[in-house]
Image (cartoon, rainbow, N blue to C red; front, side):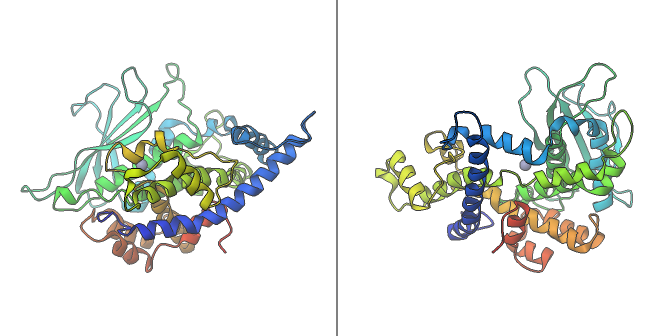
Amino acid sequence: MADTMAVDPAKANDLMMRVWPAAVARVKEEVADMTAIARKEPGNRAFVLEPWDYLYYAEKVRAKKYALDQTQLTPYFELGHMIDASFYMAERLYGLRFTEISGTVPVFHPDVRVWKVEAADGRYVGLFYGDYFARAGKRSGAWATSYRRHETFTGGTLTPLASNNNNFVRGAAGAPVLISLDDAETLFHEFGHALHGLLSEVNYPGLGTTPRDFVEYPSQVHEQWVLSRPILDKFALHYQTGKPMPPALVAKIEQAATFNQGYGTVEYLTSAILDMRLHMLPDPSAVDPAAFERDTLAAIGAPREVAMRHRLPQFNHLFTSDAYSAGYYSYLWSEVMDADTRDAFREAGDVFDPTVAGKLRQHILAPGNTTDRAEAYRAFRGRDPDVGALLRKRGFPTK
Ligand SMILES: [Zn+2]
């Protein structure tokens, strides 16, 4: 872990074990809610929840508690509007301007759109490629990549070529492409990776990328603007009526955001904690994975109702390469900074606060890995990241 932001495995463990008790306590509440619903079903009075029942009954609780389903939201998230919204965010935060130049530069597929990116003073910054639609032979999921990173090392300035890739399903000819809230957040997430690349000011290409426990922070933090009032009012317009999303519906989304976070956190943390403990064994040669898994889960008091997200024998991150071994904690580590940065904008009272945005750019996004990332965070926020921000974001008590 020498080249990570955490550096010391003990720090990663401390974070995980700080979040763990709150997550376990929340699972107990979730199980109680689900058991109450199940026991009202005919012939089910003695119901005891098993791991395989969890998501089934969680959906029943969700429907009862929040009365929210995705079909209420998709009419507000039209793909073209959301792409424009992401550019608007970049302009408000960092002064970047995006001008479409598709057709004037070579691309690997006619679907790919290209934008020229310029700074507020007109200086050329780089190119942004968007490849949004699913097609035969294309890798699934959503990702960001760089065709070229910013550098000045080889003479002159090499400008970044950033790309976002999604698998949205194209509608009928002329029909709007409506995406889910999750998809809109993914769009902003990948765009956050692109902004990290576009705003880079590093000299050496080798310092253009950041440690794995930092790299998801710039992407995750940009998801927050999807549900910000200025973006909703300008861009989340109903595709038929043109009206913005009503505040009552936004409130419903916000209430439902912390739903089932006990489950989500525990299923993730059991895998992350076991990953780290396995890597900290002085001599792993005689390890019996099944016994190690069983004994460690018992030792940390893992709730029996939640299965691990990845059990050890099929835990891809654990052994396929060194890139992610002892690294599954990274997502949580990055999320603490993401949640704490959301709070910084909230405290400033403006989701586009220029001072906070300027510091975010200067200390977090522009330097790549040329400065210690923990020091960079302190320069940005005036202190270390606050785990309380993550606990609040997940709806857990902070004490
Ligand atoms: Zn990402």
